[in-house]
Length: 246
Length: 314
Image: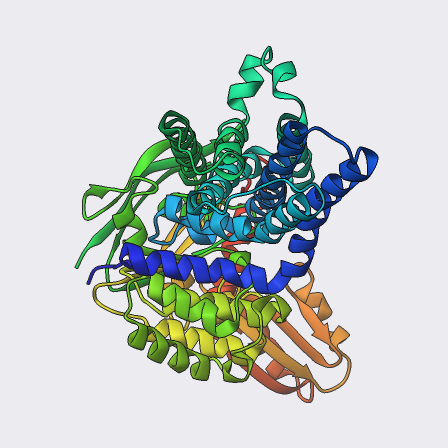
């Protein structure tokens, strides 16, 4: 007699379906939060300064799109993971014969999906209110999926390291504020903060997103490579933290 | 046939030893119960086995292959029911059980059949489309047990499988556990329902302050705990007439109306009975029972009281 486990494909589908159950439970509140805040910021800035320069508008629209991702994957996922950790519910996953990186990918993909209504709302606002020209680049969709994965891995790290749900929420919010700040502040004023610049998960995707969506489908492979490396490190660290016994 | 071995296993949290120098050899084909008071180190032992808690010293091996936390073969070999399986809370009852079977490598058809079979067996069919989060504590426990046993592994570790269950459901769970008995399987379970667990256990390990203080079959533990008898006497009028004899005889003396119940060493108990029965009209009815595992467990606990504060569970 020997134990068995599922193949990777089955495992991923089952884990994804397990996370989908969460969507069934709380999709309304998640979507509201992820859409209302970025959408609200774009609307507010538009009303405050209707004659803003085009470049500033680009910063705001792209920043708000990445912010929508960070709200669900960093803030909400970190709180959920912390809740699972504190209640020892994570033990159920940790003793199952599953790949923990695959579990994190399933979790982050699902939480990343909650951000899509927010991303679309911001894009609509940018197009309709600010008349920002945008290209629908298929690579932008891939980019947003990787952004969700990366920020989700960071949200998982925060959730696993924070002693409780409240502190996970606090740290998640602080990081989300960093994403917000970096996304919307003028790039030149931030260049001197080089360490923060490179640590924040929004740095590379913001640069790539602006190129893809606003300046036509141009691809900077070095930025993609750097961002994919960042995503792999975040995923590896989160899986290691999830796996380690206490 | 295979063997599970714990070699001088210890876990220390700051200055507290959760368990200490535990050495055990368990062969397949047995159902082993871990009994002991809260904080005795039972859950820590199971968590060390499944890799959730890193031992401070010592090791665990299965067929001489060292158990390393997180290794796939370890997770494929051991299924574990933790005390709080809330990760399944968002799923429906059917999904919680079926998905567990799928993740343990069952085909969709097998997973579906085994899930339906378990739902029926545990009387959960009517709840199959309800979300686990909306169930009562006992129903959630049943779902947790079902999600572990739906795809049986060579080692199954259950932490209080009958917690929060009503007597009928507990009965069903013990039957289910009994049916999992297999020459190539080890079942390790923690339970506070000592009396009921006796039905299924081949071996009992009694833990106290992080150490195993008794190890044997339920029968041998009963014998070793002392030659006791449990006596229930119905007195014809006032039970106080027995009091002079019973003062100090038994720490678990219970008087309910005219019924007096106590456990005492066999010779002493029979001596009292002979004396009372010799008095005409004193006793209406007498029942004498051999001690159960629970009696033995209580006697062993009595021998080891009072608790010292060195050990605790995490």
